[in-house]
Length: 101
Length: 495
View 1 (cartoon, each protein chain N blue to C red):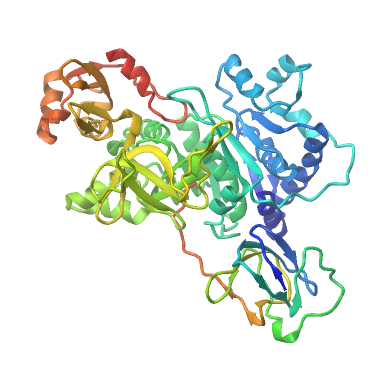
View 2: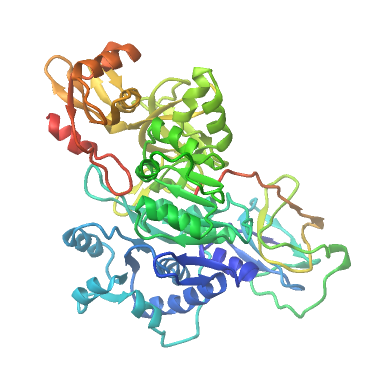
């Protein structure tokens, strides 16, 4: 369990997934990827992806909790899936904007 | 958070794709190549001991390298207007010393040996190597300063606007990562020191979209490059679009079928120009984007559908939308307030306030202009209609107070420009014993027309208080190079 800060970068302990925290609620929560807790320097050889959390992550997708309080950006893809307190995060659908540049 | 992260992601997802191409030299760099270059130069910046990385040059491939390397090295990137006089540039450089400067070869020659400056030109910056290849990772601290931009200072000394990583990251995240198709290419003609130039680099990299840089703007050449490079989208300031439209005079169409989107902003777009442009680019979607340096670029957009509707509708309210800057983008709130800071209802003119995560509203040495609830006063005047569309009157400081009545120069200019003989108009306040201030206009005409006829025209379309008491005919109205009307020059002519 740890508290998350906006802008923080975290790595999966069991796959290549890396995320950046876009927004996070206050207080501690357990963020996992592939079933294992994520950390700032998680080693990639300490275990394997839990088959229950193996749907994978996609680079550039934004992952949110049901209530939307936690939002993560996948900055490196991997085989594990992201979850908070055992519940898998969902991909946030983005609105299509007209081109402004 | 760090803007360098976006480059890392693009390099990971589309490393081989062309990221930037310089249309003048034909050189290009891939996302992977740009990532490697930014990484190597971040260490060069770090070893230099500089507190800022200043860039004084036209668009070229070193621009994105310097910008991302600065983010990586944790020092602010400071693109400076290369058109300023030597004295003006000196004064700005003094404010960011000790600085690492990348500039043109001639300036480098003249500046070598100056105190507290490490100076490179494009080529030497490419060639320089760091002593160590033990390169530290960038900071993810959201509050680190990413970019310092000197505002154009149309009314006074330039202010140094600060953008932190969190502002630029928040802005960029409006886009969808990697959403550009392989064939997409954005033509960037806005200069590197303009917020739209910064935004174009960030959003293009995040979308993995190729950027074609065009350092100098000349309408025929612009069309030629757009055709040859298969440009699919571009951003122009109003003066650029006006000149493109003018250069296509007599043509039925611009014949640029690949060009899917033109967005415009950075100043007021004359109605006749946008209407004509929509005729010349029948397959192109138009978007009006309104934003400020202090808001990390775009905060409202009038999209393609609204352009089309406004053009086809006979309903005056919907037609008028073509002069609106549209609706707030996601994450942005707009409020219109009176001089006392009270919120105003729809359709009432006041000062525009903006709130959102991309809003920095902060200047070096001055501090933050954002209030405790997060609202930033834009100093732009305008109103919001019943559907939430924002209309701009111009700068709040430009509002003419005639006998206690607030008059918007922009509205009067719009009416003048609609006259068949008027090409462009600038309306300012002039001193008046009777009214305190009175309305004066400088106009650029395409055919001879009398002052009387123009006054009559305004009277037919607006309340009589709006009719200019004096009208001068000018060969050319004064604009700065990014399309901002230099109202103080017009004002001086009536003082």
